[in-house]
Image (tube, rainbow, N blue to C red; front, side, top):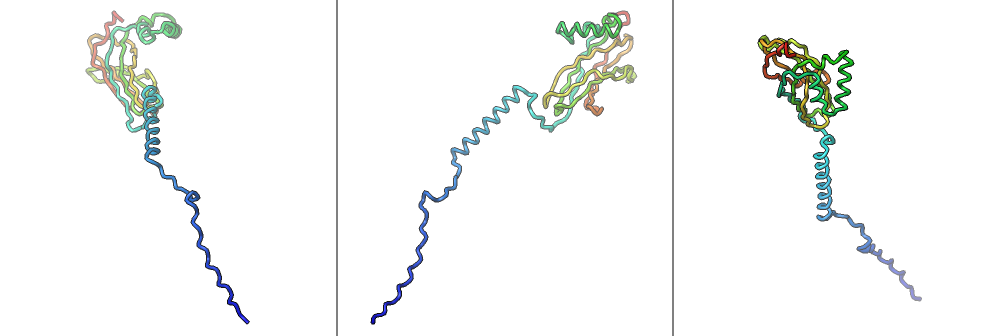
Length: 212
């Protein structure tokens, strides 16, 4: 009787490696892709720069420099109230409307004929986009250095851009007395009343009462 030995267990099969096409591939950005993205970002940045140059009011305010510069650059003498309205409002309809308001307020045209001083003030705003500032004007006796006309608000503005510069025209009532000298003081304050800029005009003699 022949006894046969049991068959030997088969050796475990080695797991076959997945084909090359089945392996997940890790995407690596190519130099071309990086360059393309950088190019798009550069184009967008350049486009925004052109937009801000064309429309400065859209430029965001960095708030890195806050301040106001003021300078009284000229004082015109013997300017009537009516002449001031003509200069300030070159549009005929705007001038006519302002003139009607003045006549109604003063009860006649007499006040329009009064001569005073027309003061030009240059203002430069920095970092005040959307923030209001106001211009106050007063008159001082130059020799005694005392205020003879109180400060009154002559204008209010809110900056439209991170930096803004313009000229303001302010008509002042007559300052008679040709034997004395005076100067105009411009004060710029923010909405909280804090003084942010101050400028004085050159001294000038008072007006001749016979020419007022």
